[in-house]
Length: 210
View 1 (cartoon, rainbow, N blue to C red):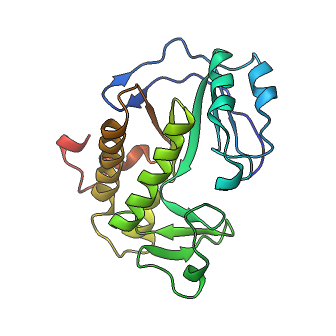
View 2 (spheres, rainbow, N blue to C red):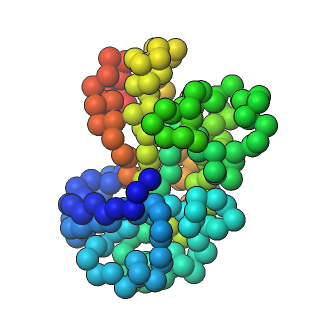
View 3 (cartoon, rainbow, N blue to C red):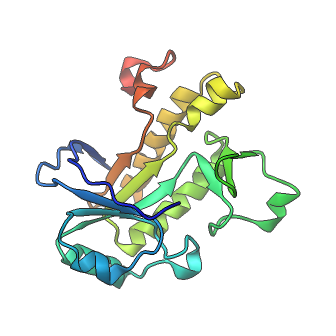
């Protein structure tokens, strides 16, 4: 992962209870490495920042609620990156025993990203890991989450066809995430989906899921 920024208009963001157009947000930034909270606070070129929940991806260096509050006090929305379609071996949930005896939800390593593994995201064990991850993010005080690798459904449905209903199962997973957030937090909390825009046009997706 390289340090970089993306700046453009945010049109529509899902929250835990409704959809809202953030028309006041014109620019945003994205940074997953080399995160310096003080620099983010001082920077006035963007109004929303997507960052990892910790300085090196591990739980030991997760940002404090005070640090996240500093970002918010500077007038910015603080959004936490989270991959829901792949497991990362440097995260708090990774167990060394998985290297020799992987759990049923763990798939092959991504050949383009060492240490990242495809997951059968529809399995309850993986979904519970993500719910726990989100609980930590909420406790830190983030305004929302940036869901990456939603397009993992395509891997299991087309590239490595083991789950013919992976498209609808991914939509259900995101719905489960929303329901979990609603159950643990009464505050507005943004759910920003990354990629997989075409999932709503997949063969198995019905009108109630769009």
